[in-house]
Image (tube, rainbow, N blue to C red):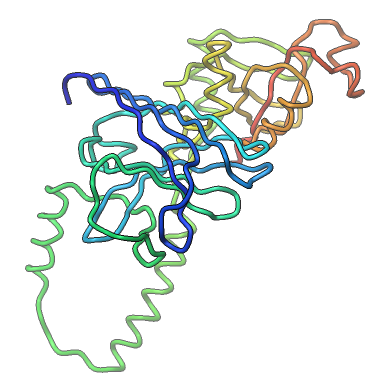
Length: 306
């Protein structure tokens, strides 16, 4: 996708399926294979919460979506700055030129839309909204179709059907338990600590500095953290993240920051509730008193469950 485009689109709340008040705007810019969406969300009744951002597109007369990030909402307002790839967005097999708009869902499950392409419908109803499902490529679709054609057609008894359904349920349970493959965090750690800057915090917390792109080396179930607004804010301010192990042996992903009330609230909302100080002063390093930690530099962290 070559060239550059930049535009502003307004966001509206929808009451009973019909457009109501304006709730802000989004600025979108794309350059080649990279893009960024800046959202200014306002005039809502949400005092505190999180807004989920998705790209929206029409599919067979219904609205499908691709989740791309989230942002905090305080006193009815919030802002987001989310980077994305214009080609094969989050492995959806969809490019940005197929996207029709943006959708925001607040903590009360209320939806807000902005469409920059004309859609032919007078109102938006719940039955028009589809959950996110990864789109197969044309090659994958052809392969599936060919496999279906090759399957022999035969009559089966009701008893066989019932047995197959039970087996299918059993198989599905096994697949759900193994959605994400097993992995060895120790192996990832050994690879990274040999080529990354390593730091010791206190006597037992060891970590390596990593970049945003390094998150792709983690198991897939953690890739969504690359669109976490709190993580992105910390990375663009300090230009690094941390991967390390806590004193109790748990692995963590860390974001640099300052210990203060507002940042503590935002860190907790976005899944980084833990904090340890980076000061070398032994008194500060082991401080548990809130007053002693206040305004001190440190690391907000998210535990990676194995």
